Length: 511
Image (cartoon, rainbow, N blue to C red; front, side):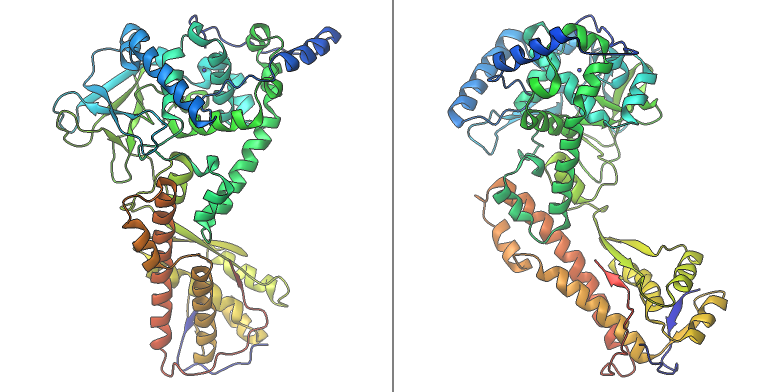
């Protein structure tokens, strides 16, 4: 039972494998003999300058030179699609094209386009499992894969470590053409922007006021924790130990290198449905980041009959970029995972967290009342774009509960079978005032206004990272403004909206 506002109520005082795809065997026990201790020191000295990585942000001249060499290698070894055809990719209906990068020191962005006119329901391509990287293939044993990913390491960390080792093999690695393509993309989405996980502190300030900034910092800490556990995989994965007996991960790969590789894998990993745990995260050549993500698309990569295929959901003309659905992700996740923001994202949302006051003498009764109505003592409310009014209406009963102070009123609430308990005008005003003050405070945390955001976005030369950050905060502000407008409208609908709010020493907290 929840509380509803009633103007007649009385005012109450409220106080990646090698070419042979050799699996990695599990060692039941692993120990380092004294000879490896010396080898480790030798390796550290010999490889101190090594920077093997999927993404390397070196000096501009060095990066440019490296990219020019990479471009020449494409002519020598052929493109990704040619390599795939040579290794089992059946005829398909796509080609790889490129578009200019925003950054002159980077090679153009590659993308998958239709090679012919397509209709909804057509199979654009079907990549055989032999060309798909999963933990099942990397570790050679589904049980091992499940053990690793349910312990301290994520699938992304395992895949990133594997690809870093594969890159150390250079051209000898079966996956060399695919790794070269990931290097070229540099963890950039189709808008040529890296994930904020790779931004500088100054660039992260573009997100000031947005909860996304804290999410980025939290994710970065999580990557650091996973890095510290990498040696566990090295010890458990027998063939890695045999192939690289001195390449202890945390000594062979500095954290920044692993972080860049992790983000690169994150930007292109595919979450397959209806497969085993060890196959659910897959790296699919011709998949992301060569495919563009779109929030209003329904086409998804799917595991079908020994392959990962894409059935398009719309018509394409020859040369059109192919798009896939990225799942019901808000723009904050799209930016962190893939480096872009979708202005038309119907899944965009913000979170409002409300919590009952634990110092309230009636806290336990209120917690029980909240639980009876499917809410928690600390409740997260999702505010979806276009449904801000519904979100505010969902919050109000919870907030009203926190404002009840009279024990007899609380017992009435507990004995009610539905939202029939009345609230006085002054109590309702207090609830609405707290909510409106909260939305104003969140809006004040941003360093720019909506009009300033619009002016920034009108600049065609705006830095790409600042552009996507501005797009994100602008959309967040629109959601918050819609919530504030709804709350103010409710205040204006009170019989006497000039009534003073009731005091509430144990009001819920909002953050």
